[in-house]
Image (cartoon, rainbow, N blue to C red; front, top):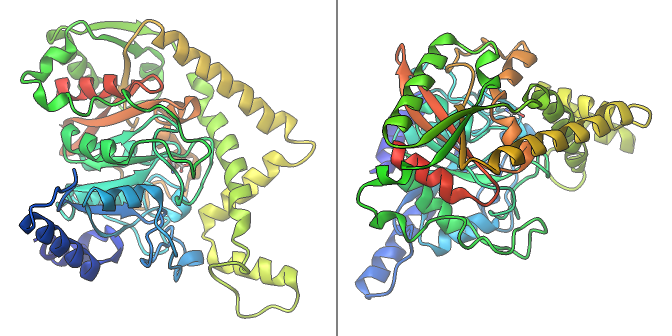
Length: 453
Ligand code: GLN
């Protein structure tokens, strides 16, 4: 049924880079077999799942949305993929994304942009736009994404689905192509909170293959307990919720402010205690993020040299020319821009002024959040300061594109967890509410999400 849906919709949406029909149908047959034989089946048994194309899938092409990896077939599965398979989930295909996860619209993909299923003239958000669109369109029931500065939450908001970026370290990144190691996290998309949590609970957990993996994630997610509650709104009684006043002073769309205020009233009416707080360093988050993330990614992308794997230029005479021509021909404009920015920030003589200063700002932002979380359970904000925009509207102006992540990047800088949950429509376009929780306090954002939903 899902492949029929894909046949019908893919021409207009383009959520997938590669499909895996044969393997998926075989996996489904294996689960049928298990059921017939009375064997135990996993938590994700039979569920059609999309995997963002920067996550390794054994024998299934993994491109990162780039010409550089157009023909790259990984010899192994990422840990998250292994976990989906061992929970009997069915991987339908690899979803479209901004090239190497750099972007907020999926327009930088070498394989063409993904369209927002709600309005085909608008972007689905990014970089995990393919995953969000595939879930919204019903091409899959669940999807994996990655979130370095908002790439799960912002597309979830633009496509009217739920997206969770877990706490840094609770989901293994082994086998996920790194963009910025200190910020990257694998997370999930679902049609509602329960679906998303089901998937999250299947992929969370310590992995010795990832040195940043957290050892004791038990208790971070209220797995077993949430389906038993009959009235989820009970979760909100006495919940301490903070609203940072800084989010309303920015040049955010006034209709978004209004809608968010309506959601705040809903929380109040369900018994939550709401206070306004200040996160004084939020203003510097975007600048710090673009220095730190470009520094890290410029170093990570050095491995794509045309020698070890990926694209190799046809014409070159010297080794330098091999590197230069391969990278010139296979990387897109945004990737090149960021490699240059990051290389600049790390260069001796400039690193003190840029990279090191950004690290200090990051510490101040972390402190702002830890002060807030000493008193509050969750913090709310809009997921994005703007509604889903039209194709071409921001792609020529990188700074305006970067601003779409104003409210999501601080969460990655501080290593926290956050969810985007649909909270209304403005002129036919969806709006997401961001629920931010402290490190390892997934239970709080999940309870808040379930109560609100
Ligand atoms: N849109 C942000 C960026 O372009 C976030 C990317 C991401 O989270 N992978 O950097």
